[in-house]
Length: 441
Image: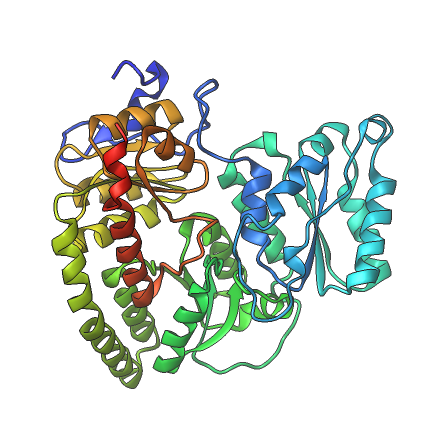
């Protein structure tokens, strides 16, 4: 493995081997061209889907490009989050400071759009020149009578995972600021961003069980619901990497317990429903959950069997942001006859990688915080037929001449829930079995 940098050897392992535990949760190695994103990106991933809030980026215009419809994050109501606003800092602002420009921009936008709250994001330039963004936010909050929250997320101060924490701290400033009565059996759904409408599918499952959804944080999110989130009985955390810190803050300050779930694949989706029913110790709720799962599986399994017969022997590479998602993907692929030969993530933990090691077949490559050179070599060595990843992995697959399945920000098909499992099978089949691969090397 000459293509792996010497300092990264401990971040690559094989399933089934007796090698020491994979090293993870460390800063990216300089020069490795990590697939990770910056702190600013991580904060935007979490906060952007709040549909009735204003999102203003204090920095050069290039940082605002991330907002321009790159993510789905569908809304059932307001769509203020779909607009991209930036203070567009220029050289003059870098020299003399951008606080006046920030105040004028934010003030005009708040007056024009009348948001429920405003998030103002600091970028790398602002972190260098030292604008008092917090002070501007306090002034605007007092003048406009809405929460104006400073998101201190200069990209250079860490990785995407650090951005998650910054976003959770920003969200927590809203939590507990309103008190409205809600049904006793209420949950908050944390960490689903409603990229292709999945959240609405999940909410319908829970409603059929008799569970009230108090707040969705942050897919199809609303500021008022987040402010009242502390009154829920339980936090159900889908993307543990992005939202676990918010769940911890709410548990520490408001005694709201949390559970980690995944909505990808049949096994994990079913467990997510059963676990909520067990939490409420409600026999009727559990019976409704069982009936729902039985109905969905009766409809779904015969269709998946056909895809399993067609895809038997195909091999997949997975590289995603969070390792908990990767675990669900391994299970889902196995259900349709696809062997996983590579599994990697940007932000996995030791616990996640140990589960992956036990779940995967002997010899499966497990990698933390990989880079394009490594991923390209792994895919070729393992003769993968399809690559499952996000926007930065797509070019790697296409350059090699490999089928690609987007399981991240840009997708338009719902891949969560039982309906999502069928969509996933259809997409894997259409991609892996396409006749175009006869013309690639």
